[in-house]
Image 1 (cartoon, rainbow, N blue to C red):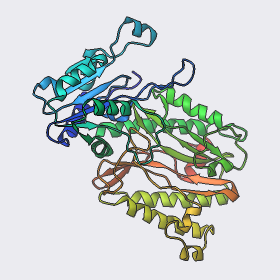
Image 2: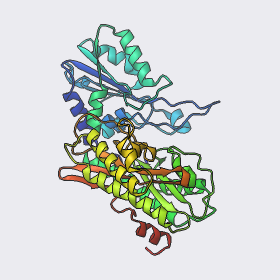
Image 3: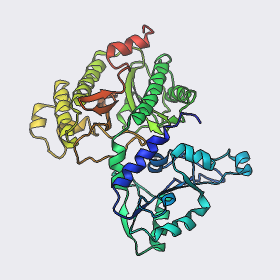
Image 4: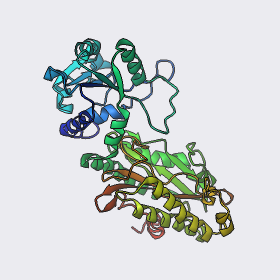
Length: 431
């Protein structure tokens, strides 16, 4: 493996927590992702479905999990199905988990091969009063293909039409939003790799360097240290490109006098970092660039201080909007009259800061969580304010990852360069 697996007790605890939320005689079914085709005989790299990874730690295709806490036979209370390994698969693809290895990884004693799923499910489902089926209910999800998860749900509904159906997603969202120490440690490893990549880039950035060359430096650092690569498609946006929120072409040359926006994070062990930093291509910010940068930094610090247990996210985002409004007025980007006459549904600050400030982070970069309940201890959020001035070819965004603690929060990027002086000194080779 590229990375040390989390403990089997972690996954046992996750399954126990899910089981506590199930109705009496409930039976839950989870499945892995497909391996998606590209073209000809090509496939995209496999990415495990986060929910089954959270419950088992198994990172391979054709995996299914059945949870039936009240099954009469204790062996049927947790059942894992994994792809049968053999010599042919071992030669062509690499060996899959054996049954013993699957038990060691997950803490599940009852392991079957995937082809036995239908038979075993039919054996136990008659005892169940209801079925918990899973689906992607992320508020930003846009699904244009039928996933393996949806195929399984359709199949089970059709084959057992008289069983009541419950949704697993609300339970999973609540559980996954509160991170265990092992998860936070894994996120920290991804963050530390991102830090290493940033420092590597600081040493090579200069006018004429291509954006994709910077992307390659991050990739080298991540892959050579056990990461599978980027947590998401990296944004390496110099000059005017930084004003395009999801710029991913990364094909321009960095010009003298420009600021480059780097929205990059490493993946490690299935968990993700999400960082944004802005660097002066020439090694020094102009006064205007510095003023805008420090305005964003003040909003970032103010927003971070606001993140604590019991706060509602809507209240938080409203407060951040007020902070940003003041900074934009001071920068003379918007006027007091514009603020006075603004549309409450689209405040004046949105002209230069048009996205949200924070999202949940974890197994998914835009992780699951409940936006309509107070912030809880163990939540992990990004904090990422920005100011985008298209007419000045200048976009500044700063982003750290914050874990909520009993006394407030802890910045997982605490050892990252952030202040203007730190960045300029590092780029000059003085630190």
